[in-house]
Amino acid sequence: MKIKGLEQWNQSLAKAASGDFSRQAAKWLEQSGMQFLDLVRDELIHSRGIDTERLLSSFRKGAQDHVWITEKGGLSLEIGTNLDYASFLNDGHWTVSDENVRWVPGYFQGSRFIYDPSASTGMALKKQWISGSQFWDDALLLYEKLFENSLNRRLDKWLNTLGGKIG
Image (tube, rainbow, N blue to C red; front, top):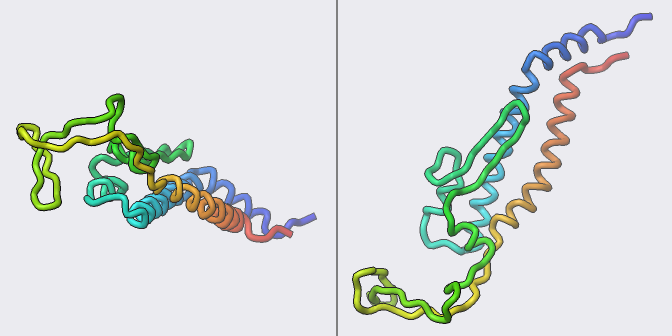
């Protein structure tokens, strides 16, 4: 009995076992991480919850205040930001913790408040709940759908490159 294509399939398996598959998987994982960061930035812009570029730019690979950890062998990827206020913007927060009013030193320049710790004037912040924008949660929901489809397509492609047709 002769199986057509078996030798080619064996060579493809040997190539995959030699690390080619691991390198391709690591590259795909990094591309997936970049896609997720794009979604996070898009959702952050869409939520209109920021007035500076600091948080937005923290969601880039290699950015200051970012988190980007990959482990190629175990195919692990950790993405995020080290900016504390990102969770407040996403989840919501109280303007004042325990007190009912918090004094913030500073002054008004037109309608804009300027924080100045040495000022004798300022404003009183009353305790209120600020709803979160859910930018991270929304991006994660979108990404989970995209990731599943991408993973299925990638696995099919990898399996097809391993052996073609045996028969």
